[in-house]
Length: 103
Image (cartoon, rainbow, N blue to C red; front, top):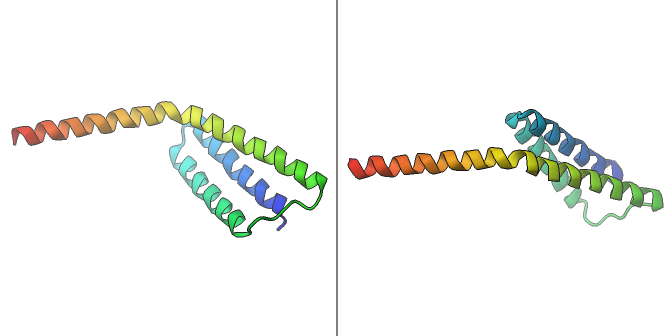
């Protein structure tokens, strides 16, 4: 597999992460995130491999911009959910402290 195919596979996984975040499918988001992480690890294991030519360098930049755009939108979409989760966890902790105080 050439280096651009590795970047494209990461972009594909991040695109699935974005689709899952848009639909609120958190299980699919996590699964796609795990795949994305595996693909990034594979790319990192290859070491510093430069694209072969100007076209490949351009394609790498285009793909990286797509990945960064996916990441930005995913963060925007998940921020409210993460905030709700943080509130729920904080409330659970408070409830536990109150129960412990009266036991």
